[in-house]
Image (cartoon, rainbow, N blue to C red; front, side, top):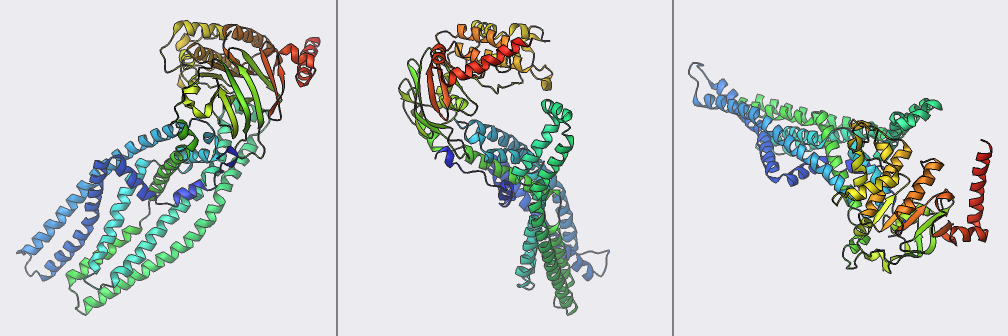
Length: 620
């Protein structure tokens, strides 16, 4: 499947997940994770659910014994057995309840940890990033992280235990109607089952109405986060966007729940009808029992047993927050399973894992042959038959207007995307036939959206090669080249200072963070990366800082294969080869002086940028 054929995320993800059986999903997930504890929990809940039948039978026996008893001072054996049995059942109820909850809580905590691990594993499974960027994955993550409610699987399993005991116990009591009038059992059972299903449905739709579907909820939460993000807070206040944020958050939330509210109204009407049906069936049954008692067709003891059983049926319709916890917990388990499905199997990646080609060393060249690429959901390809050659050990710069495809080339070259058509060859070996994970270990990347790891300054650099032992010489060289010494020196704990206020450390400016990222990429190159890729590596630096870093970078990486993307022509003029991209193709190719002499697009862009610098100098 090409990227352009990727299916867009369907709306209403939460609705689809919630329309399955969250209760059975939770139960199965718990039993699979912990078979021993899950089996014990099932046995205990079944025993606890059957205790009401014993209560109804012994209550009838007790009443029958009392009515037949002539002398209270001399109770018969039946009365004593009934009282003792009821006492034992009460004791069992008091003992099994806390044990069940303890086991359910233990399984729930284990399931919560398991789901967190599964989400992390699923997100790190794809070799490429295409599926990670899909709206469907964003919706699933929103659902898992709170878009379906704040309840956890722990609360869901505890709620499921409570509801299971109530409902199974209540319906099990219906079996006592079989020897009385057999046709009353299916009648009452059908009425209560319909009512229970609709009660759960009302809560399910209520949940959707309060939270909306994850796609809409994700947009609402995004607007909410804008109000709390320090980098955005300045613009919000300067440009007077507070009212717009409030209105946008409300509108996005309202859009997500409007449909669900209409559905909830319809289900509510149906639930009233089902409640009427239950009331009618129960009233009919009580009238029949009273009529048979007065006609002496059943005894007082039988009447008591059946009335207790019928009264217990009412607990099956009890509603509580347990229902919401079950719905939310089960839906999150389903969302995690769907996330694993979306990010798991990929025919192209599975095929790569079975090939036998060794990862090339990048000793000769990187060649793009007629490469086409279209972003998911885009109408037009961003690369249209792109072809060029990069010689190993040399520096190559990619320039062009915004949208020309420079960053896309970088992502394809480093194995983060796969081309729709064409080939990318490294030393003559097609990247589609090698292990992309191993190839990515050969690449050192500094992108224009650098990562701000909330760890120490030292670890931020060493994470350029996290699978290797630290090399102090390579570390010092990377730090010097990036100009980090003067930045780290004044930090409270030096290189051990966490670069995050959230973890008790400090934050850096954009330019300082970019130097951190540059040092990380240089350290990765020193520790074995064969390809050094720089996508706007100095965009956050001033002109003087940019010139300084570029000189240091090219001197330190002399003899390495470097691919540089930059809009500033002062950064690319020393490159051995410059590729000018336009309309998804290479339109010009050569070194700086040759392209200037050709008088083409590169020369015009360079002169326009140089003119702006001269004008800026003239106004000082």
